Image (cartoon, rainbow over all chains, first blue to last red; front, side, top):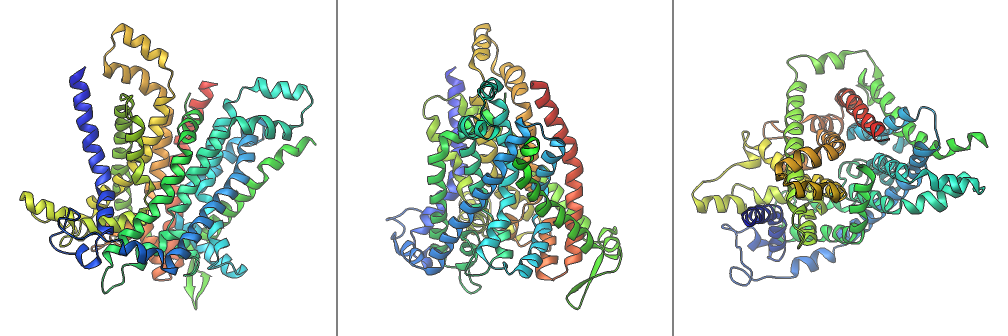
Length: 275
Length: 286
């Protein structure tokens, strides 16, 4: 028994080491002045090998580009998830409970949108958005990011709605509740952890999306996922310190979101997808 | 209103039309066109013949895509499941391990790519520095034709294994404890418990994770683009990278459309089979 624990513990520590080291390295690099950060050989221990500085963070946080991209990221992610939820949850409920004809086909076609390679969407979107005047706009990017989360919303929420005992809904129906009322007052609240789970996942997928905003957006509407990789690495010299600081700063909002939603994700995903 | 329930799916149908039907139709049309004076002109199946002929780069790109997807997905699913099982045994500190292992998911892939590019840089990178100290010598990683693909596979594994882990962990946590207790009383070994209790119960979920990760990895673009731009000498130019270059860099929409349509139908056929299996396992539960 004890040997098993030991082996397990060692394995876990190795895994943790592998998964945390790159982030750890980013943190160390972010506290170095850029010249020091690119020194050969690389310096490891703060205060011993090099002088840690907050300069990079101050520089990044006061750059209009960063602040602007941050706001863009938040707007794009929240809005596209919101749209996905608004369109997807009713659809999931209908597929689960409302006896829609061709339900299998609809379900599969929704999964198919997840299959689409980005370029197949991007090229026609460029043309249509240019025609409507949405090219380069935030709204365009928001619309383009909806497919990232829509399929997951529908599939997971459908699982959820199926798990709700029909007896509850039938009882409400006997009392004369309209279908919409049942949906709103019974099914939806019971599936709440599922909603939070898919909302978080959808937010995550939009937050990290680089291709669509890059193609559809313009420099004033680019989110963090586009600006951070390119802004701090001009051809001449990479601002090592700042790019790492910026990278760490993009992680923090996600961590906050995950911490808040964590409880719901764990119950949400498992409840929705397994027996 | 007897047909009122269709209002619930109306937005979804609209979504399907806008994000599936129109783009597909457009791309199929474009793949039979040529660009003349900045306009698409219908010219016939020439692009298809060119792209799919045996000596075109297309098939190399397809090979790179397939290799990348297969390797990455199999490793990530196995690792993710393994880590989930491992952590699940530890009641104490579970939350902490979980939170820490989740961190790669919080990173934006393109930024992960830049970070790994810096870490694995032949000259400035910390990894090569450590390798030099232990006497292994410098590895080219992203800049070497032999090592570039392995390096991006490594990066992707780092980025996405936690995704598989999170899903599997949630699933294993939700399994009924009673069966395990019964098995424990009977003295069943750890391996037998996994093989005959855990595995069958989460099998549908394993399929789902395989499909989700497989689809996503096949269209993966951000990490590859951020680290190698498809190079060196195109050894990491997967289909999505090629399509991007055709569409955006060279303005050759028809060729990009050919790649896109090919990718789509290739994946479509595979998913058709897999999703029928998943729905069938659902129906069995009911």
